[in-house]
Length: 442
Ligand SMILES: Cc1cc2nc3c(=O)[nH]c(=O)nc-3n(C[C@H](O)[C@H](O)[C@H](O)COP(=O)(O)OP(=O)(O)OC[C@H]3O[C@@H](n4cnc5c(N)ncnc54)[C@H](O)[C@@H]3O)c2cc1C
Image 1 (cartoon, helix red, strand yellow):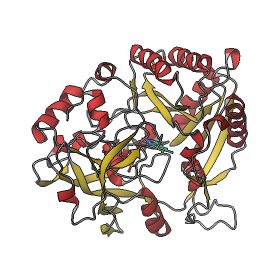
Image 2 (cartoon, rainbow, N blue to C red; image 1 turned 90 degrees about the horizontal axis):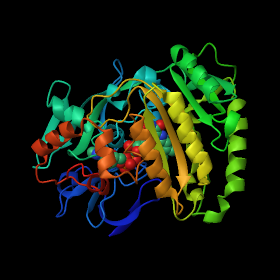
Image 3 (cartoon, helix red, strand yellow; image 1 turned 180 degrees about the vertical axis):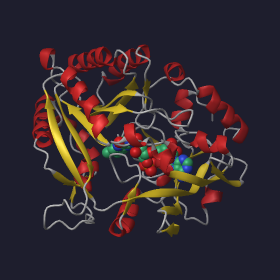
């Protein structure tokens, strides 16, 4: 048994982890008690955990099967990471179509969480870049799934949390790029209403937009934040001396071991926010993709900085209707909690994905980190109720605390997902700590 955790380091459980190569993956996927697939373990909570049971880590499925230079269609193993795709195809003028805030994620993980990025309002979720995939089902067969073949299974896997089968490979479309640089602008907002107004305006003008607030602000300054917007830079506009298709070397900085919990305290948390505010507000006119998409990847194992008890990222989406009022309520509860909110991202989301359990819908999404402390569960339960009352839902890719009843109330297409699951995996071969906690089935 191997101790395993998600990116948040909470919960940490012993699992029967195997990491097969492509040849053995189909056998390794099956074990008494059930299995869950795992990619690079960047989900924050228990999505890729299976206490006392099999976890099949698929980073060994890391080969490219074919690439069409005309269309940008890449056929690759499900364990290929976005980092590898950028490194290998970036210099040739291609980039992942949709990317989350870290490049250390696998194609299989991006499908299972139907991940979204800074341009969700304009580009949708990862599903938009997937033409088809090959999936190992509970009965041991391998089938192709696309919008035209096994279409229900195809849709179900986006946000399906690995519970319908093991994705072995996928055909994804890459984006043609002229440069690996972004033109960007930053706007400072004095309060929440100003920030939300700026965000609405930005979404009409820019594909990429994301805000960050200082969660310690209260009263008239509540929701004070910085909005960063941007678009791909063309080769002609780049300032001299910047290689248009520059790819970064691996980061040399890393947090070598888990730091003591006391280092993250009310003083350091406030200093961190003041620094983030300054850095964001002073954003340079052109940013390399590393800074634009992946600022956190600059420090390896940064999650160790949050202390031995780990941390959680709370991410919800709530409708635009009464959105400002509900966000205010949530931010007030967070500020009064004393529970050291840290990194956060506020964004407007576009329409829903095709998966019954895909997270996004039109509205405001806030993702915010909290170190695990004695009061964390109670705070998140309180926030869950506000989110539910607002007609919102929690992102399972980040979650470790939601209960089954609240989850069912937040995901109205849950029965649709359960019906697909009952058809392709009636015995619940694919199961995880998350699926059992939330009573999803399996
Ligand atoms: C710094 C940081 C920033 C992030 N930013 C964003 C963001 O902006 N937007 C966003 O949407 N998410 C974001 N995330 C979350 C991350 O993108 C997702 O959790 C992603 O799914 C992780 O991919 P992974 O390969 O690490 O998968 P894992 O975390 O290992 O697994 C995630 C899920 O995928 C399933 N899975 C993995 N491989 C397969 C497979 N081959 N077949 C079937 N199921 C599989 C697992 O069972 C599990 O349910 C962020 C995470 C971090 C750490």
